[in-house]
Length: 300
Image (cartoon, rainbow, N blue to C red):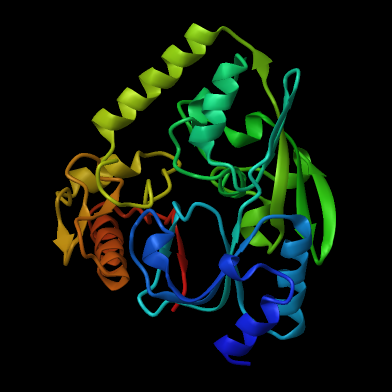
């Protein structure tokens, strides 16, 4: 089935303005890198989600689900099949329980929680991800992780809607059950606490200022490129291997934070991948440490 046929069939159930052919993934990733997606579909409710997932499965079409695109590197030849972007943007607050759609950005949610004087989410306020992506990778910062506040998550499993409690989501460092399965997160319930508006605001401001000083947020990247080590700080050993500022094409080890690979302007995915390999090889040769990727590589 070619792209035009897929487009034609999908438009029978999904508004045409939510579907595009040969969509540049540079527009949908924080790295601003990557080739085109054959078909790019935005879904806004569970019915649309189920329809696209079932259609892809029945026709053996590759399906890639993305959130904010802030933790992925799309390869230069793009992504075959369908790329599905979740636009579940609801936020519902009842006392200290917050039900939030998978497509809500963490920064936007943080502002809503601030207005409602709910505390416990400040650690995530500056992470450039959606709720779905943050849960998938158990995102964390400043001593907090998603696993600390997630009560339960509604997701699509083999075409059926299932609710998983915290324990069933198997949270570990930068990992969850969603990292190893094709479960699609629909929404989640967070358990927070009543707090003080000024204290919450000041904590969020402090974390944001800290990010501005210590992280290269002025350049496109996918956040921290590598996972931290069990007994070492990855950015520190990359720095000690004299790799800060090392570049291949427009891909560079950040001069501000060695744990970040940044796009100086026109980096290709191949530049980033070659640079990642050089970093891993150099660190292993000099220290014997095998550093692992935190970002996800997609496409071809």
